[in-house]
Image (cartoon, rainbow, N blue to C red; front, side):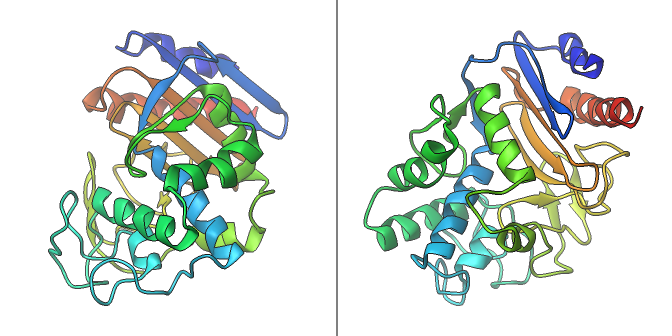
Length: 269
């Protein structure tokens, strides 16, 4: 796929990208090189939490986090917890506050319910079954993942055609949770509403955004401060991954939407 070659012009030392589509998989760049995922770790952690819900280990609406908060609030960044640190800076369900701490509290909650470290649960529930042998988590479920483009292709394929989760669970996870909440999308400013699913950021009608103008409002995914992203557009039936060694900044806010539009335009022809 020619559009993938656009990553060669990005101002990073190393990058890898992939597109997963019903017509096949295209990869550009080093397939087995590990990259720091930063917040692209969160969708993996989310998948583990959703499997725990289906297994009955935890429930979406059971208490977790600050008083009045639930597992659902933590996944949807609606618990009121600060971005970093355990202080509650808003009432539960009042604002969309993107919180690394919320995912760390979620990891602790799941580990306690499952009677095993969160890293072990993630391995047994997600990474092992998907054959993601080059992916690991050593620390925070919010941002401490390491993976390769080949491994994330396996995860992106799962998101397009779920096998580990029921389709209805993925549908709920990619629907707006606590509609109408305002909040800041890191790197792109305040949005009213700042729509979010269960662990997945939703494109919806946000502008500016890190996906492209050709992406449908149903697009969901995540990007990371380490210069990484994964998005799925279920309307187009395509997922796109990019991993780099350059911290997110204005370069990415400019390059990523143009990259997404080039990928989708090429698939349309």
